[in-house]
Image (spheres, rainbow, N blue to C red):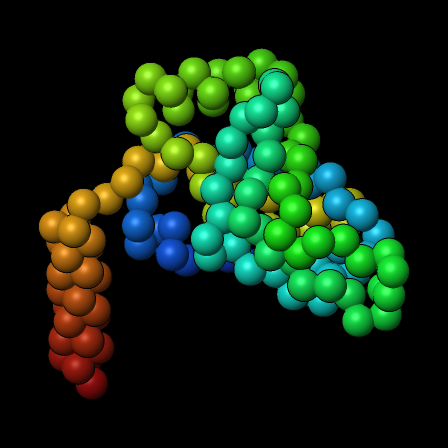
Length: 155
């Protein structure tokens, strides 16, 4: 039997523009009933989100999960900090790297794994300067031009 694909619900494309992603980690998300229904509907925004460690627990801040339409009084605050589920050793190692290297923990995407569990891909990121962003754009444009030229040459 073939392995099921991960279903990506939301991606943080801005993170790849603003940061160099050094490493990625998978973490579970502690969500309530109406929140998971909104996530399944794809009503998630990761644009201005970040992660931090408080009292040995990793929290995702700024993750906007829209209220579920049929949730009435059971809906939670859309911007409440969401607890991420990772091993304690991983959390402590990441906390040390963030403090020493001046990196940031940024949510990169939310997806459902094969078993239907909501997972978040968290990246250990280092900020880009403006000249790095221009250089990345120039490389992307050059690659696009090369692909166009090869396509035209093949005709």
